[in-house]
Image (cartoon, rainbow, N blue to C red):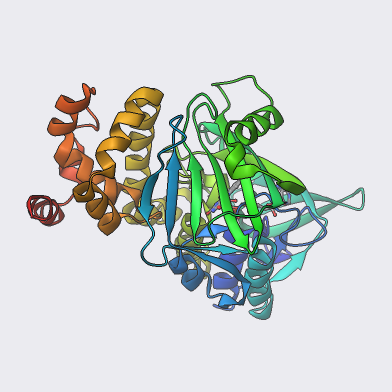
Length: 419
Ligand SMILES: Cc1cc2nc3c(=O)[nH]c(=O)nc-3n(C[C@H](O)[C@H](O)[C@H](O)COP(=O)(O)OP(=O)(O)OC[C@H]3O[C@@H](n4cnc5c(N)ncnc54)[C@H](O)[C@@H]3O)c2cc1C
């Protein structure tokens, strides 16, 4: 039976994951419709826009959207006087205008032929043997779209993920604000890593330009019943010397779905980005991983669309490819998070004292990479016996990490530490 398809692929959500997947599919000549519930791509913003330069490269975006360049971090625990200084030497991250970032990816996707339909809120997805039917609401009226397959890039509350029965991971809620503030270092972010202030997560301030910052704080949803505004106020009050004279311009916020191993494909459907829980458990960053996943999603569909071979088995290549690429890094991120949660403020202070020693600082700086934090924490594995003795810590990281850091890297780390 011939179907009257509206497109080969329906992508739900016009964030980085959806727009990039759509671009890579339409570049190959496939017809793609992107359904987005909002009127405008990239708005409202729920993000700090803190990414590595390599993320800009993958997104193929001009650096004109970069607002500031960052060389490192000042990490504060409840010991306010003594930050741990990480990096500070070379550019390690950039701060982007997140709205323009999303618009820029969508624009190149549109140039490749993808059709963006705004103000289309998807409310149901029905997957049949030979097609997918997506129901959206536009101007209060239902519209049905028929396609060969669907990509769920619809973020933290993904309706497509619900259809696939995906488990939900651990959720962090965050409140953020754009603000005017004098005296913040221009090339360093500040991280507030006290479990009292931010239960299960951390607070931050990121310089976006002269006398401008993005501040925020998050908490693990199961760890506190306190309201986000209260936590933000407490942060501002706890560090008056950092936030003196701050003028909040606007508030934002949202939920971060931390990585959890789960299936991201099924018959005629893939999940990408936040919808697939492809979010770093250490920092909550999800832009880099969602763009990487987008390329594997597009590849899996591009390879199978002409044959209409879009069943569960054919699309499993997507899960295989992205897992091989960054699944292990995500898993290690979960281990790091468990260590962080297990430390508590006192042991964190003692650990930070050790990391302040020049030897440790230089090693941490050599291996620090916000997209691949396990490189740096791999050093911890090597040092686990020493740290355990010094701090009376429990096992810092699972023994399995020894197999994770590949043996060559392992030797380099050890040699490096002994120098
Ligand atoms: C406060 C905060 C700060 C953050 N800071 C950073 C950071 O500094 N760096 C970083 O890398 N990551 C950060 N993140 C995470 C990052 O924002 C996400 O990981 C990233 O946006 C994921 O992209 P995505 O395309 O998967 O989802 P999204 O960007 O959320 O896009 C999903 C899109 O789908 C649309 N949509 C949802 N449901 C439907 C529906 N039913 N029908 C139609 N459309 C729908 C939404 O409107 C949206 O446009 C932060 C998150 C939060 C909450």
